[in-house]
Amino acid sequence: MLPEQMLAWGYTRNCIREVMEYGTIRKQEIGAENVYDYSIGNPSIPAPDCVNEAIADLIKGDSVALHGYTTAAGLPSVRDAIAKNLNDTYDLGLTGDLFYITCGCASSIAIALRAVLFPGDEVLVNAPFFPEYRVFTEASRGVVRVVPPRDDFQIDFDALKAALGPKTKAVIINSPNNPSGMVYSEETLKELAAILREHEKAIGETVYLITDEPYRELVYDMDKTPNAMCYYDDTFICYSFSKCMSIPGERIGYLAVSPRMHDKTAVYAAVLGAGRALGYINPPSLFQRVIERTVGAHSDFSQYKINRDILTAGLRKIGYECVDPRGAFYLFAKALEPDAKAFCEHAKKYELLLVPSNDFGMTGYFRMAYCVNRDMIAKSMPAFQKLWDDYHK
Ligand code: PLP
Image (cartoon, rainbow, N blue to C red; front, side, top):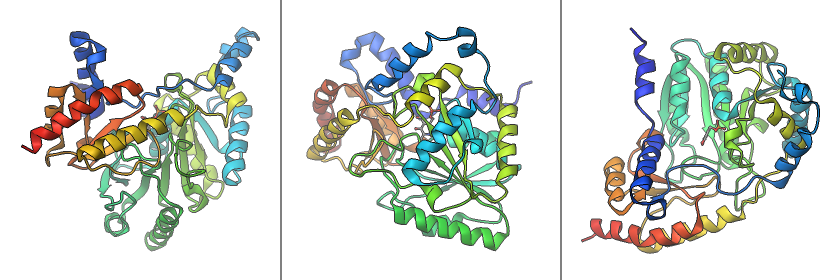
């Protein structure tokens, strides 16, 4: 006998992986140049030069020290460098001893949840959301409650208030958002903070805000993304260098506990415990040191902005309704039938690989990752036109 839940997660893939795997097969069958693959958020621009320069320099040093174990939470000098960088940007008063370096955002979120959840605790997630939040929550015996968004994809505060209850232990937000491309405004974050503070008072318990920020610097029409930790004390920041530095395969990110979090010393100890329990100790030592030298650098996002503008304009010209993408590298658009899965299945007829919104916690939309080759966007437009025509005969 094996645990049913593990088998279910092992056998079923989320909507993104399902489309991606189909794409791999299809590309072998008809050639990659004939498939319009918008399925995966894999950065398509190079890492900043300083990343490879740091690697080249580091490997000249003492190999034993470079490749050896580090402290479980990551090297203190790395944590200090990241704290300084965040403080310079947001003036958060963070110190290195509140950081836990992780293998990307996925492990940061899993650790934060494992650190604070008791079985049966509820975690509010704002739709549309990254599908793995459900797995990470349920793996820690928590229960997901989905909060639908407002029409403009900011948080629907009435829906949020209705979902808050005596068992609410955490709320997860993600801005810039995968899949909608929405960025939460300062007003949204301030209002969210006020509501959560009020709820903490009402139930006499801490409600943790987990802010998932792998796309933090990837914004187009603003200087910087507003940060929730500025407005709410009981906040964990979960960050990854995957997307903004174009190094997702290197598996490096962090979790930061707010210096103003209630019981922060105990919570940080629980983070250390959760890291141990999940086996997430000592993230890659070479890349910890790379980050120490390069933190604050990011890839040149101008290519994504051009892609965003071409894709959005092209689809809108045909008639598709798109959410205004302000950050990340995703376009979220209305499917042409209520059943997004059926719509994305139909799109395969024209070799368009689109991700249905169902696993993101809402129906009726599809996601396109536009971190792709520019020529592919141009070549795919006639296919989008044919798809549109099928629904408007
Ligand atoms: N959170 C969101 C919203 C994401 O889009 C992703 C990856 O696509 C992750 C978390 C996981 O990030 P990482 O690859 O750094 O673990």
